Length: 468
Image (cartoon, rainbow, N blue to C red):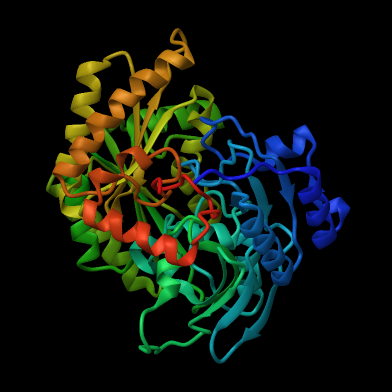
């Protein structure tokens, strides 16, 4: 369907809903709110509107439905698939002002969050009450709960604590006709029909606007220890994972390549974890419940070294050292951003990661030997991040053209291994042409039908995930 442009009458109507200061049309505001971290698409929204209540969101959606206006919900805009990009004159519905965290229940261990609450804000709120919100990632200081829900954000603790969907006890969503859905209402057991909450989680704003979430909290972890281990190859990394998982409950198991480490050390002023250079590195985190856990960890280290799976390693001796070791992994994205990398967030079943990664590297290296490949990711859950750095002497236009070819090769491999083209960042605009590599025609057809039920006018983040 063709969606309408925003005229002065509509702008006045929006101002009547939220106030004249909360409808933004300046170039700087449009550029700021019209994009996410992909930086591939040119933002071109018609206006930005900042409601401060659920009722205002409903009024805005009803107006958009009447006028045929496209809406792009906007949170912290930290996504990497173009899901929050407004490039076709859409109305950006920014949820920053719905930033409350309230109604804490110590018995239920839940708290209500406005969609605009920042992830770190929720984490701090839980900590102040002696509890813990475990979903964590590098952008927690700027990402928002509504966006986390809409993309089913994962991060570095998935191996222990799961994805965002595992912590959503209830959800309020404004659908494409402006009606408010109050889903699950904090219940632990609720088998009364379909769980529509789970449909909305990960839907990237295409079914409706997430306006509020009731989030579960849990017992805070005890002091954690961090191990960084150097391994000769990915198969050894997998042996290390199995060995430690069999004996110790891990809260994280990350990996990164030697080239990734070199970039971080050079550009972030960090120290190498140890002198030995190895092909890959594993970062393990676990709770030190008692001395026996650390003794077991060291015993496992010695065993892995005897098997040749580990060539060197270091264990944190303090909280400060643990944080420094984590930076070796978490600072990679920021470090390599200066090369405007081609990024791909892909996954397969954990056991097949080594052959999966080797197949991807082989096809890229064979066709573009001049490209530097940076690997890192959450290998404990099968999620790897492929990053290809743009050579300085290659234009962005040519680089993007080459990367389009790379995507096809990579997704052929993803399909062969029964994996996902998007492990944790969504489909958005960037990957919708490749959805068929992970989803069957029947699945996509059912998705389209679901969208029409939630959004009969086709105004909710149109063009994302798939076209109608």
